[in-house]
Image (cartoon, rainbow, N blue to C red; front, side, top):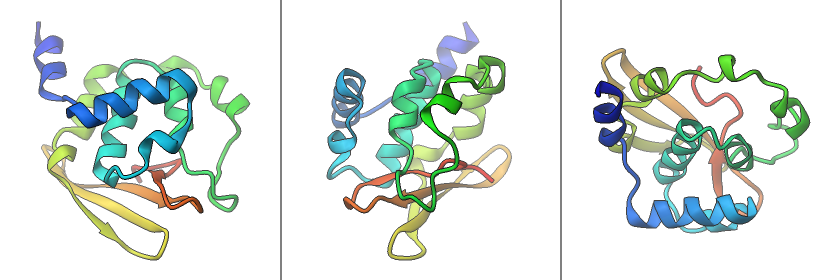
Amino acid sequence: MQDEADQSAFTLTEAEQTAYENIKSDLSERHLQGLSPVSVAKIDIQAALDKEYDVQYALYNDRPDYVRWSKEEDEQIPESDRGTKEHLLQTFSGIEKGEFRQTSDHEGDIQYMNESGEMGFQMVKDEDGIWNVSFTPIQ
């Protein structure tokens, strides 16, 4: 019952849900065009909660100097290393109220508070101008 209550506390807006459904259908990041970095982060978290790992990989940035592992390597990550729903919800609690700060022309992070204190979620703007998730968003 607690898991359901925690899950219901994390929701996507209608625009985010539409983008998420569209990305699930074709794995194209073009569906992120015009969304804020916070919205992209929320879609990434929803994909992790839903165990949609192919969608989550599609949300990672594709700047050559920032790619950390291949899709094939991502598929080899054991589910036990991806975090439980409870852990994900705890870690990302409050991100929807976070504030994005751009730190360079193509880097930035979402600053938010949760019970662990101040958190940061790193984002990278791809060369196509769309904000994507850093391969290691939480440091």
